[in-house]
Structure formats: C-alpha cells, structure tokens
Length: 223
Image (cartoon, rainbow, N blue to C red; front, side):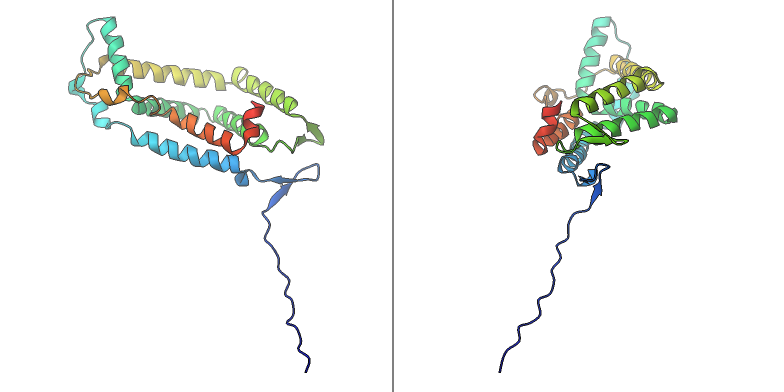
C-alpha cells in the first residue's frame, strides 16, 4: 500500500515593516533604528541616574542657611561649593526655567522641536547607504549637512528661538549664582563630590552619545 506524504504547509517569515523612500527603496523606520533605540535607552537610564543623585530640596531652600557674603571672594567660593553639592538641583532649576520660557513662546518651541527632529532623523540616525531624497532630488551627506546648518542658523539667529534660549539661560544662571552666593555651605558634606568627575547631569550627554557612536560607527564618522 503506497504511503502518501503529508502536505507541505507554506511558511511565511514575518519581516520588519519599512517605509518606502521617494526613490523607491525601503527605508527603515526611525523607531526601528538600533542607534536611535540605543540613544533613547541610554538617555533614559542616564537621566534617571542623574536625578537619583539630586539633593533634598529642603536643603536647597533652608532659610536658616542663608547669609549675606562678606566679600566677593567669599561669594565666589560659596558658589563653587554649592554648585559642587547642588549640581543636579541647579540643572533642574535651569531646565524648568528654560521649559517655562519655551512653553510661554509656543512658536519658538515648535521651531526648536522641528530643528532637533530634522537633525535627528535626517542626519544623525539616517542610514549612510540611503541618501536623503526631498522633492525628487537626492542630497549627498555634505549637502544634507549644509542644508541643516543653514536651517539651524536661520532658526536660531533669525527667529525668536535664539533670544528665548539666551534669555532663559541667563535668568537660570543668575538664579543659580544668587542662591550659591547666599547659601552658606558649611553644613554640606562636600568630600564625596571631589572624587567624582563623571557623575552629574552631564553624564546624560556623554552616555547616550557614546552608545549611539558604538551602535552605528558611521554616525560618528559623519560629524
């Protein structure tokens, strides 16, 4: 009696979704870009790590610890010590002032978000083997960089974005300097801050940048 072989079922492999470029080629979605995912993950981890190192806000606003400095040199020394201790809190204060300034100027906020998104998706995390195609024209890496640089100059210097950012940063620095000059730092434990150069909010910039460069070496080669 002849045996019949079982029917062969077709097997379909799920392929990652991709968008179609204007030139006809498939372009990987930004959310599926390994460098972009690594950047976001390291950004989130570094941000949480930096915020975990903040000092209690009660120490920052303790009214019993405020006193007028006797000289400019004493005020400078206080600012240095307080900044070493309250670094994360000061960065948070400046960030809040900057955020409030941008939220009260929605046009500047929209322009800044658009500029950052353009640099992120059109240059930093765009695959090097897929040139930028806009309105049927293909742009090389140099042309893309020149286009984004010109757009940055226009947005920052020829719109209200530059003045809003500068005003907010100057106000934040003034608040930090005033607090640091009048806050007496004698009750603060500053020894642990002297032997740590990599901690603080700036690690949030170094960590994600290194991760993105490791994930996609071509990104670092472009800049």
